[in-house]
Length: 155
Ligand code: CUA
Image (cartoon, rainbow, N blue to C red; front, side, top):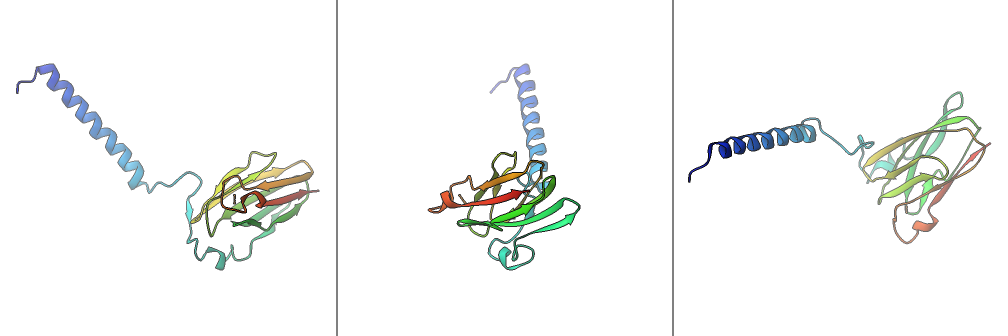
């Protein structure tokens, strides 16, 4: 088979581009040990609720008007289900699931993340306005999905 000179040049350029592209993607995917964004911490969903800190889901104060909320989202509840904080508080949420994928959305805020078995997802939010904030599961997770909710009371 006879190839025109330009045809051969462009085949080489095309092939080289492909190799270069696959190398870049390969390095990013494997060499840097990439994970889904926001899910850098992995845990064993079978044992995560038996070990600290997720064995005792709780809200703890870590500074002036600063709190840490260690939470578990599971069929069909959030733990802790109700939290009270003073207005102006910043809360660092971390949450995981021992069963299936859930959602974690705080209505009226920009906090909206997935709760994934095997991962710890995090979000931080400052509650400047007093009121009751509803935590809703926005991923269908089974027959009790529509009752899966929690509450944050800001005073
Ligand atoms: Cu949990 Cu829907």
